[in-house]
Image 1 (cartoon, rainbow, N blue to C red):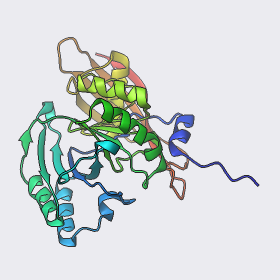
Image 2: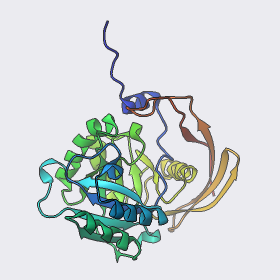
Image 3: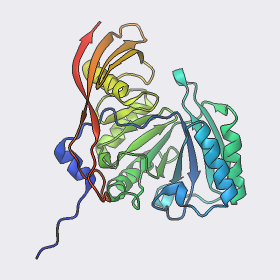
Image 4: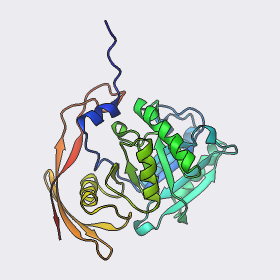
Length: 298
C-alpha cells in the first residue's frame, strides 16, 4: 500500500484559496534576539537560558505586549562577533524607535528588559524578516529559506531569517519592521518586487496580510481600499471610524494626502469548517476570515 502523500499547509491553503487579508497579528513592539545555533520548536521559549534572566525578559515583554523572535543571517551571510539583540517599536506617522545591543552571556540579555523600559532611538534602517522556522512548520523552511536567500542576496544588511511569525499556511511570510507590515503567499520573484516596493513606500494589496497596528477587520478594509485605489505609502490612509455589529463591521478609511479619497467599507467575519491549518497540526481547527461585502467612495 502506498504511503499517504505528505501534507503541506501552504499548498493546501493555496488550493483552497484562503483569504490572506486581515491575518497579521496585532502588535507594535518586537524583541529580536540573534541566535545562531538551531532554533527550538517553540523559539525563545525553548532556549536553555538562565531562568531569572528569561523571566525578566518575559515579564518586561508582557507589559508592552512585545513579540519575541529569534533571528539569524541566512547561510553564508552569518556573521562573526557577538550576536545582537534589538527592541523595535512602531510609531504613528513613522516615528519609529530602535535599540540595539550585543550579548555573549545569558546575563547580557537583561539589557533587553532595560531597553523595553526606555524609549529607544529615533529612526534606523528597516528590517526584513523571513520566517524560516522549519521545526515549527515545514512550509516555513521549504518555502522560506529559498526566499531568504534571494532577499539576502539583494539586501544583505536588511534581511534576517526569523522564528515563527504566525500564519504558517501563508508561507513564505515576510515581516517588515518596525513598519509592522506582514506579507504572505509569496515566491522568490514576487518577494523581491514586494520588498522593493515597500522600501520605496509603495504598499499594494497583493500579498498583504495586514498592518500590525490594526485589528483584523481594519486590515481587511484597508486591503480592500488598496485593491480599489492602488498602492500607497504606509501612512497614506487612516482608520477614522470602526463600528461593530456582531460579526459585521463598518469601517471608514480616510486618505491623509491631497487627492486620496475616503471609503466606507463593510466587512463580515466568516468561520471556516475545521481544517488542518499547519503542517504539524494534530487536529483540525477553524479559521476566521474577513469578507468585504461593500465598498463605497466618499
